[in-house]
Amino acid sequence: MSSELKKIERAARFLQRRLKISPTIGLVLGSGLSDALGELEQKQRFLWEQIPHFPRPTVMGHAGEWVFGVLEKKSVLISRGRVHFYEGYSMSEIAFPIRVMKLLGIKRVILTNAAGAINKDFSVGDFVLIRDHINTIPDNPLRGENISELGPRFPNLLDAYSVRLRALAKEAARDMGLELKEGVYVATPGPMYETPAEIEAYKRWGADVVGMSTVPEVIAARHCGLEVLAISVVTNMAAGIGSDKLTHEEVLEITKRREGDLAKLLRAIVAKM
Ligand code: HPA
Image (cartoon, rainbow, N blue to C red; front, side, top):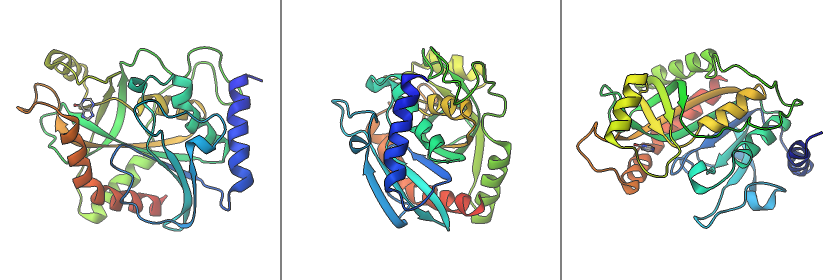
């Protein structure tokens, strides 16, 4: 057995010994998007630093926490915060929480992120269902020895973003009277925002939104057979698309403003799952 799998098993065992519920849905919430879901029933909270082998905080701040509980009558795990490639984490570290979710018995993950819009039909504040991705991050969690207990050496990424879950999300949005766009997400390594020339190139490739997260986690999730749903919040028009100069403050401000509606949408989706 690979030493990585041993670590994943140890982390899962640590949690299983303490958990009162068996979660089947995992929600990974991006920066500024984790507060509005409200309190969970039968809530249990673990800081990542308490769980064996979880990614340790970098100089940039705290890594994250996992909150377990019941939401809309479903046993869920909410991952508040995540780690990014641009912070210096390795792909194994980024994939680690997703793999622990798999061993905990989770079947479906919903990932959210902040993104810049490349598609001019999108506006700041829009929610975009990710239909497919393009990965420009120069590494991925499956490079190196395959953890064959989790999945195949050469997994395919057809239908990486579940058609079934996307239909369900559209239905939930329709019920709420909320517009849900759909598009292709391009992942960049960051931490710098893109140049206008890069955005122009990504547009020609067919990308609609751009961000610095999610894709490594989706690759790890699909490798181990989890069903994936991913939603971007458009926090800005991408470089050269809008007139503004991009700032992290702007991204945080828009995510805060859209957090309430996103939480409502996530609740409605979880209720239908
Ligand atoms: N580019 C990359 N990542 C982002 C952006 C962007 O424009 N907005 C929010 N995250």
